Length: 183
Image (cartoon, rainbow, N blue to C red; front, side, top):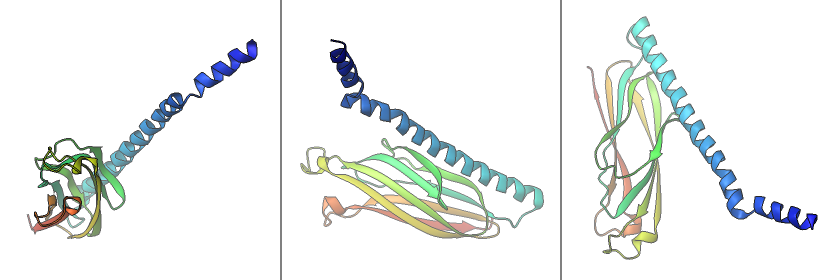
């Protein structure tokens, strides 16, 4: 009788639902680690900005990175992820992000920098495009830009939907617009 109770207890502990529930803290830890890494990267950039103020100009330019979405409503944004030179800047659930928002604003050292973007969408045909709700889309893109020794660089990331002659499964794209000034 005791061995049956022990077998039942083990079965209860190792049930598939319990194993998945035990994985949730690992996912939470991974999310916390990504946030901490982004915070460390932001602290480093702030330290560089402080150094530029203390030791004089010419150590970099002010950089503003913003996203302005022009994706049609047949696609719902599920996740937004940005990294600058391999360091995470932002990682969050998407939601309805139609309004432009600032991804990064600060001083970067002069030279070439790479912005990496990952956007995840799910199809939402609004009963017009019946097959689209089953589709999931992951857009990965990188853009290299040069920061001068001083001034201001504006970088706009624009996810958009290609025209009506392109199939719905291939319509999503990302475009970058860069402007600079000598403030």
